[in-house]
Amino acid sequence: MKKKLGRPIIEIDWEVFENLCKLQCTLIEIASYFECSEDTIEKACKRQYDKLFTDVFKEKRGKGKIALRRKQYSIALDGDKTMLIWLGKQYLNQAEKQEVSGPRGGPITVIGTGYPKEK
Image 1 (cartoon, one colour):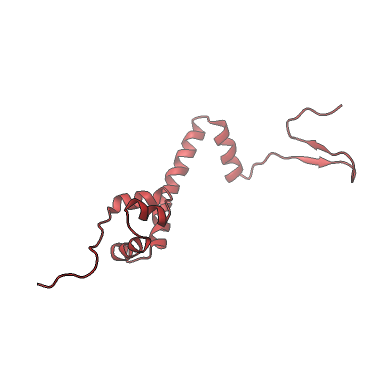
Image 2 (cartoon, rainbow, N blue to C red):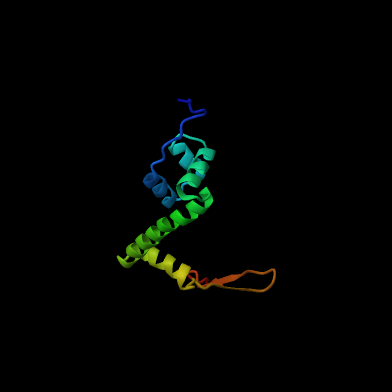
């Protein structure tokens, strides 16, 4: 029987790999987790998924983004005012409107900031 040449193939726990992608971990971080090189992860993705790491990562991280969005909505709907305001700005084009006026080169007045007006 012939001896195999080269290093043995590193076993990747694909469930852990996919969870790391969901957490937006980089290729470097994932390789570090599995204690191997980035090239090893690239080759393992090609064997497992028949795709490049970047393609697998894009696909798997989408599930992480969905989970994060779901949690943000849950927190907002539970009454977190900061999250409600942030989501309103992101998805509903809501903004705190401010007007700036004054003569050129002179003092300016900012309206709509919540600060008391000068007398």
